[in-house]
Length: 245
Length: 66
Image (cartoon, rainbow over all chains, first blue to last red; front, side, top):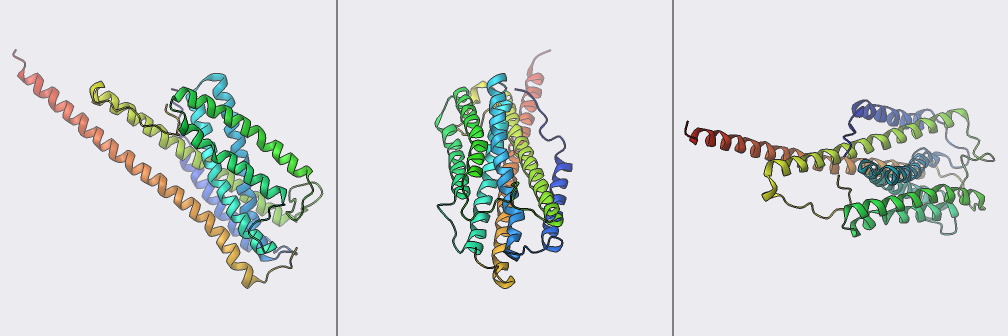
């Protein structure tokens, strides 16, 4: 096992996340103007879009760590991939719920099934919701790590492909905010959005580090317990979806 | 697209969205806190185990004839 120091820079990163998010949300309500068409309800945009973007980037990061694990065989990369996907799933739940609330306020319906952006995001979410059950179903840690890495790589490659396919499709009602043809935001709205996006990215990295540090501490404790208790009292690790270092 | 909601109607939706985010973060932090307390408990158990082993070692050393 590589003893990577996951906790390095955790405190300044946590502070940065809080500052960026609180600052960004303050800008949402006190600096950015109300959007002309949707009015006040468009404020959800500054939360919903960063959640979705960071979640999708996190899924891709999980795939990249999966590639690194298959190339180098370092179990730390498997752990990084697992944690990146886990945090991304939480953010994706946030993106789905906030999107649904926004849809109800704007379109009068919680969900629109013939809208490619919504359905494709749901497909990506459901795909990654299978990741943990897949890991849990495989008992052998080596096989579990390899199969999970392959899943993460295929899923990670699917995310940008899916994104491009949705961009190519005719949208019905969901706006294309970050495209070349639409979404020409004024400077104050764009700046607010970028601060919120940076805050969400910082939060993702912080939560990643928290979870990696917690997992590493758990593994170190388990190893210490084995050494102290001796082989006679050694209890095998119970089956888990999480990587075992 | 339907016309913009007045502030009174839009407010609860916006508040709900931001509260959902806050709830997700708080739930995550609570789960991490529970894990941290478990780690802390295990560290205490290991410290007790190490102390018992030290006492046992001392006792063994005293019983060995010189």
